[in-house]
Image 1 (cartoon, helix red, strand yellow):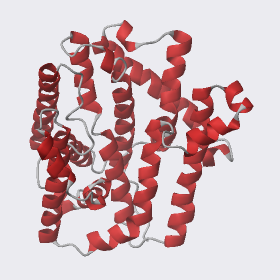
Image 2: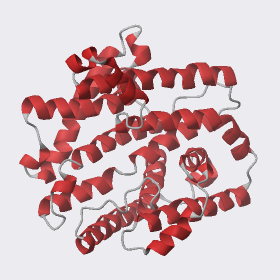
Image 3: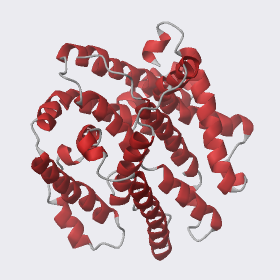
Length: 351
């Protein structure tokens, strides 16, 4: 593969998405214990809407990088990427199993750790690593698929993704949909090509000039803002009608989340095309970008420690201010820790 200049737009997307993940998990505090008719829940609902495109964007970044390669070396893929991620997953699953059960309890009964790590309910946000491992494993097949597609077949792929992925999921998640329709939806076999693989492939296509240039930044921004506000309003309305703090429109495959993710991905790529920094600033910027996986993995631990030792709960304050500030605090603590640990041999391989 020819050596190409690093695309800093992807680093910007990575850092932004990492913060948005933390914003979602911060906004989730007290989600199910607060009435959806209150000011607090309305604000939390807005921040939840704002942060939901983060995981699809992460997947699109990986797809953009992997599927634009001239070829995928299978040995390198499995040793450098898949095995590496598997080790990281096990290390962090063990870490959270020990932290969540207590060190003394974990030492006294290691079986608890084993059952937590390899049982059906490991630390929930680690699902992203499992998904990434799956996507990397099938990436050579996806590479062959996207490189054989013409414009017509790409449009067909988008239609299939919309109908069997986005529309199906959005309708299924709505609480007032009758049971018979849920049953009909369940008759369709879950196809991975309309799951995260679709976002993975979209990352490739949305990095090509013919698709990047289809809409201006202004149009994309308008679509994004309208979709985000509409999703927040409709989800709030559903919560009022159902009298339950729902997340009906916040699935990774709901129509609003997909539209927001695609718009943000294209806006950042277009806005910062050719973006560059001075060597010194670039060094720090890239260090921050490279620490985002660590930030993602450790941020739940940081949130828990801040709550336990400093009683920092966003709902104790005005959530309009406390949620983004608390998310920023968690991001900064996690990022600094990540940049420090990245410089320690061996540790930087498993963290």
